[in-house]
Image 1: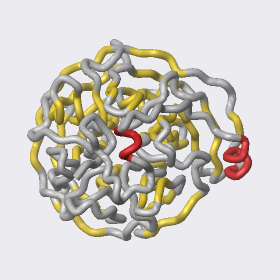
Image 2: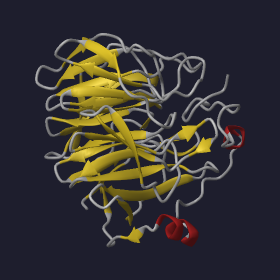
Image 3: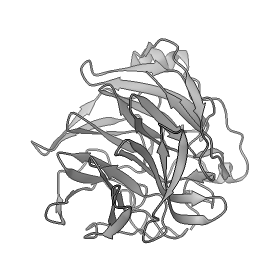
Image 4: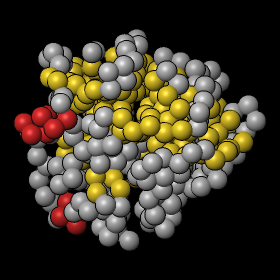
Length: 335
């Protein structure tokens, strides 16, 4: 079954309303600009013209990786690498030296996985280790101090194209697709202190290829694709009450995006729109006002990319600028 987002024909044409078949036939990516109607409907406010700056490129063109920050470095975990195919490679961007460093590889190769981190430990969860859509439930941790990976209790519901976020020391694995290509609203929490999983309140919207990040212990899930199409939906999960709240939607509905958090705001970056146009859009959500602003776009449009925080900067890297056209370039943005 042809599926997905990436370098090896990765979408499920019968599930998504976007045209994966047209993409594979070479439809051209278009600039990711917002229309006037989109801005009006979402009441987005144009932010000052900040810019993205080029930083050191990744060691190899990579897409569909896990991405997170730990111990002051940005991690790219697994994914699809042009020279390797599905990979277990892990690299870390050091903002001090502006270099990508090789670190210990994951125990297994996989892509379309999710990643999250506590202060000094990176967690890699789920994904698929082949191109046929068989989900894995693997959960592994990487100790940034010892440069060692450890296999942990497997996720109860194996999923790919999921998202993950950390809150109060626990890791939440959200949504994604199972091995039957069913799009899930599953929310499972991993407790590192007991090496156990528990089932939590499901997301209101079942989705995959979306992004999740945490602000003040609240987990935000944004964008993605559903069984009926591409969404701009933003939902917030409060672990303290085990409940979800629907928030203001993004100005641009999209999937295969990434996200990062800086200064208490959630930044949604890149992705594909409902017509499978490759986007460079960057939009920021402020929880204090429940509103979005339009930020400076990426220098290049891309999807299936990674992003994470490095100090007071957002680092966005890798991804695909057209179908099966991977890039290693990376950029930093200071709001």
